[in-house]
Length: 104
Image (cartoon, rainbow, N blue to C red; front, top):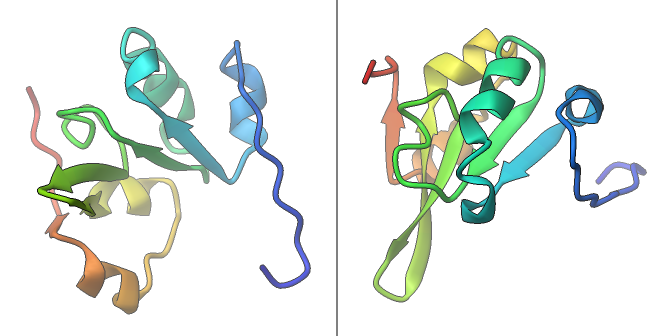
């Protein structure tokens, strides 16, 4: 990680999340996911989840189960809005790359 440390924390409020580089929003936070994503919209934070429809509501990377494998989809529009660059290697590994966010 190029000399950088890794700190994992559980946040009860949204405010400290905007200082993070990556925020994982799991299924246990499904009730708060829209609030968190709205608060982080446009900030340089990579949002990752495992919630159905996560990309549709503004998440950037969503993990999905395919049989015994875990794959991921990427919403490139939300990454660009957050001023994040996705490497071409990561984009090739993704199961799907969405270039436009669907409104639901």
